[in-house]
Length: 326
Image (tube, rainbow, N blue to C red; front, side, top):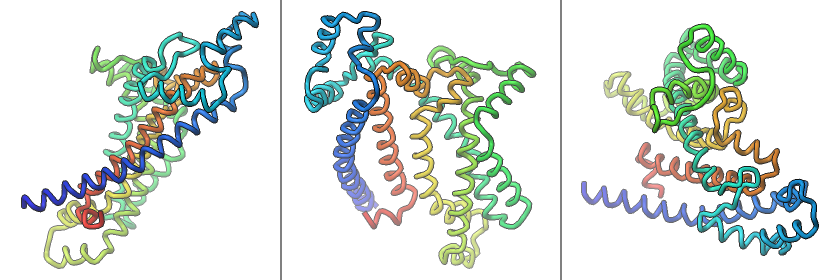
């Protein structure tokens, strides 16, 4: 038993070392791409920083101060050095370090995205399992109808409908705003449950379809038929044997969807006045706040890549057969 545990941890460490070795050049390429695309945006950053002050001497001073008079590769090197030390620059609009803005907005979107993905898992996975097990029955048709409704319903329409019902008519929940968890967790959950459900609704429909497809494939496999032939109960066959092997594609999808949510759900955040990543990057693009755009996109890409790594590690814990392939 001890040797088996050591072998498992050895496999895990080797796998993590290989993946991290792949992540580093990927992040470097992403940083080059982000910085390069930023240069293609219209407008002169020096003029934006100068505001109404159009004195050529002032503009020239701004160029020297921010190294805008240097070649682009040199600018990138200075920017990358700052990023590696945790300095993403300063916001042109708020005159605040981008690092502080990200530290303020990321927990908001992280809370909202985590709640949305939990709602999606609690609804989508059980619905997909029931649909696959009860294939061809009213349960199956009902689950597919729910999936079609979830995918087809626009987030802005569902958000407005929930506000009208639970805030205006019933008065149970606040219509907008955000309260940090550290201040009042009850008020925070009350303020974020509706936008989290709006986001989780569409994801749960996608998860349901993928779970159903994976379960149907697994239920037709030989080892499931063998488990049934041994006299195991249907509950044990489904939950212990079939569902465990069907979770692999679901983990991938969940990680990708969570990464998408953390990049900012712009419409939902606007409807419920949630001060998250989506609103931050939209405001930064419209105000040509280049440092904020670069910082937010880089952090989002890093989180996305990290979530993929977490999903790959989860595969090994969920499906022991994958350990032998590493």
